[in-house]
Image (spheres, rainbow, N blue to C red):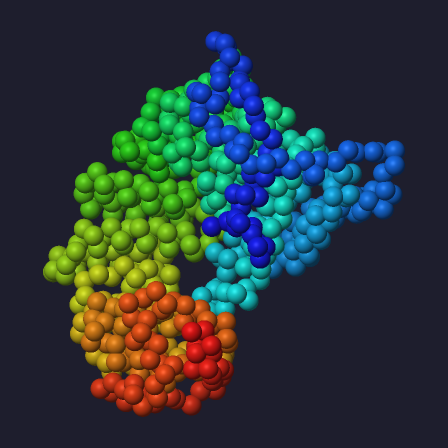
Length: 598
């Protein structure tokens, strides 16, 4: 999930909870109808059993401030300025920005420097980290690199580690009170949003509750900006009921003329998930009023778009959901609402759960695919948008057509033809189609594979793995078929310049054979291929990862034979010979390395 990246770490939770002073009296919030006890009415957890460590809190002495630290603080400010310049570059690999963030992170660990940083400095630093996390995730999703093969050497992974560590350090300083006087709601909001991108849901709620229980921070942590970020998480984590969320919201914003639009969106989302459509529509109406007063506000336009999409994805009332969906498709909105694939996928799921007809589900899929292709606002979208949409639709298609019949086969051909009329058939679509194929018929499966050639789509390591893995679901494939497909996959790796067989290819072979539905019949071919190619692992790390995948498997002893028995013991009904590769080669002594792990 989201852990403190140090060798002796006990996890993020302990980092966030340490240095939180015990709230002896219980935090109370003033409301229009008297005082509300948050501990009683909202059951906010008070992590008071942890010992307070006041060593972090230092008495500032500006008169005797160290001039070197002041100079370093100025350098910190200059680095922030440089980062703002580097952020304007939208290249996938932005090494100057990465180096700048690393330098800022290292400097922020120095207590003497932190003492001289302004609230503006720390706010800009938090914003920079949040933006960098998004950039790194976007780079991973849009990259054509093969993440499966070499993940621990990936720049994205290394950047991820660096960013997590920086975010944790900043959060630790907020929780401990070390920079208590230099933080504002926007800073904490950016920290929470950074954690949301890492899906650290329990830690987010815990961090917020600690802030609420700290009498010096409670007012800040109950600000509308913070509530906007944390309340949806607290609700999804079932930490608070819908009634408790609404009570907290009403208590905090009642009698205020202008509620923060972000908080309005959050309450609207929670109301939709709780099927309180009256309150959700009220939230939408209040945003529209703000929009009418200032139709040029980019922030309000973003809020409107976000809540509009939530009606599509979260509403179980399909009349409401499809109404909001059609408004986007037919361009009947005064504001832009980029149709995000996860919301459409959720709508498709809700349509199926409500037993709507396949034709209705098909129509939503077709309209969305067509909208993505033709709408100029969507042209910069990455291919993952189509993958999400198609994956959900094809999953539903095969659930509604569980077996091969003349009708189901005809419908499959129809949807392929429909997609080809909307958008060129590409590897993403075919990979998704193959992954979801569930009929178990070899003939139809081979017909689908022919589409790669028909549409002039070159094989890639990813597509080869998907095909090999899916062969594990089809009984008619012979041992010879499996060996030939494996050899074909290795041939493409060799042509692509690989010098080793990635872990992901070993996993595909495993799923096709020993761990497939026909594992008993295919164990011999798996062991024979492993015996022939076991030294083609990348390095010692790869061998360790491979061996650990089997440690707790019922087949652990079977695979462990590879270490203690000669290769001649592992044969199958077909011969296995290693081709002459240009790049692929033996890199390790598998037996020696695997034996050392036992």
